[in-house]
Image 1 (cartoon, rainbow, N blue to C red):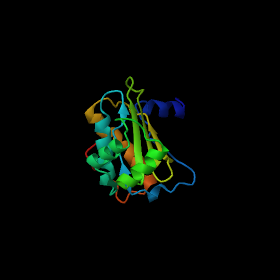
Image 2: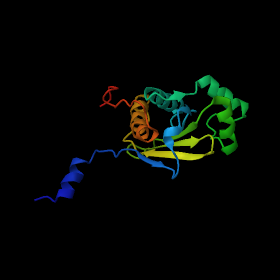
Image 3: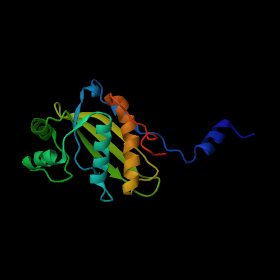
Image 4: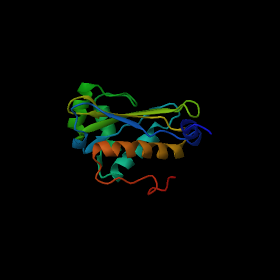
Length: 176
């Protein structure tokens, strides 16, 4: 007879664990209603695609997202380069310029199949600190089509922490 843990390992050989989400102690992530989402940094040139998918997912959950033009104007006003992560003073200034409660900074490192990593930080623009961090190791993440699936997985996990008013599942969006 095969031991139960071995059977489980065999059954779950192709499983991908859900994203791991951590909330900074003392942070009320449900207070964030307006998000600034600049392009994610990545190794495949898909950072804009990931940011668009993430922004769309936030809108699907009834959050407000700073428009691309307003966001670009805010970054330009601060003299920030594309893909540059904002510092504490930048976050405070971006809050004034865009009205964003939080900024989302993402990094996608697809690496070789099965070795990718997606990290998303939700930064509190009032305090200038990390409020929520999500880490995910997708099976694959290096194409435009995979960007949508990966971001839905991350958003599904983050939605619970952020207090999404409405959360659409992957199945409702046609992903299986």
